[in-house]
Length: 294
Ligand code: PAF
Image (cartoon, rainbow, N blue to C red):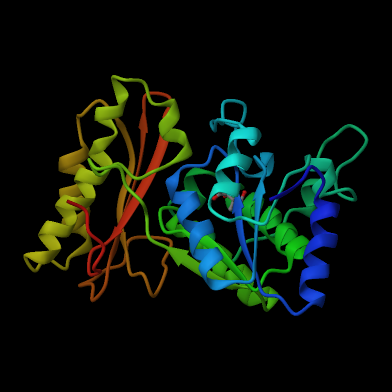
């Protein structure tokens, strides 16, 4: 696998691949890779001639209460993992490398250069993390411009992000956005780079997220279609278990709304966010879908 410390090197390599008529599958990451990321790379490997991954902890998408400084970083380990699943090229860079025209001599990013995300950025994560999706849209648009992928792969765990990225791709006219299932530990905890920061005491507490989702799915399977009742059930399950629940919410997966839809719902995705000790976790589950969560 080729490793590039500068995005410009990756840009040239990708351009040469495209000139030869090769398709490119792209997996953008912030590193601290786990099996969920590697499954995205494996899927990209199966569906494209070339596979490219980026590893960049993007400061533009972190807010004041977020954990930019403490976000796990391990480029060496990440590069080894990417190579083991058939990635052809991994690249990284600094903020100034990615945005040479937008970062001033003081190292600060020019806020006016942030990209406005589409309507899917409103509500839930968008409300609780102001500016987060602008930061995501800005870096993802730049990464797409560097790689110009045929397809790009994202995990379902970051559900609202997948909608924001799909809107961005529609606006740009490329790439095809492929959303892959959430991978979970055997006890149901959704894989996340942030799980590494859970203490031994907090790790079991983090299971309230998947338990709340499972409870909503059970109620759905018993015929409940009222989003308010489904959300209330999630709050009952997640409440008072030593975690700070930020939201337990329902949305129609085919029609994103900033607030809770009125219902009754024909299709539903249940979404939760909670702080478990110092770590903020999110998870979601299609209630009408086949995805298992035992
Ligand atoms: O999902 C992530 O890891 C990040 O939000 C992404 C898409 C790599 C952009 O920084």
